[in-house]
Image (cartoon, rainbow, N blue to C red; front, side):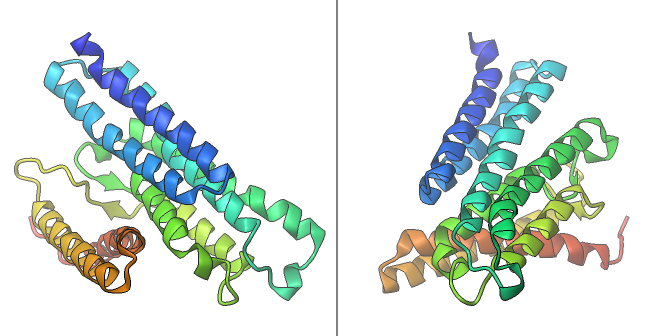
Length: 248
């Protein structure tokens, strides 16, 4: 039984993704965010358990990708789908055709997530770090953004065109050739330093958001916003590294 523990964790990730998708379609965005976080927890540890138990193999890798497509592809896309039904539409999109079609464009991100995971499985360059935005980071960003800032996203300062453009940018980040560091520390990895810097920055962001939350009385709301900001910082650090001198 203990040797099936990694697969049990992976299936738990999949179940979290299914529940998150259900919550998203029923406007339970906070619950969807929590279940996506739960899926990320199981996803982080299933591979670690497999290596510790000596059970790493193609079966586990393929099962993990199938679970990730649901939790980090379909679930956040479902959240964007429901958001399209409540976001403001600019004048040039004010027609039944746009109202009917635009929500379904959210699933382009699910397709991009599937492409990202398929690429990861066969790309020999991604054993240590990543090429393109990891699907868990993308899903957490969207889930945190929507659950913490839905009122702003559906207000007069935002609209369906901006949401679509933002979603397309996010989908591109999943499959682009921009190097992104993983948060797994490995010996002699030159990116260990920037990982430590990022973790310190995330702690500072979350502490600052917690303090603001205590002052305003909305601790969870501010912490969720801090999670979205942290993923934004992660993406920016990936782009900044492109322009830094490559020390060997």
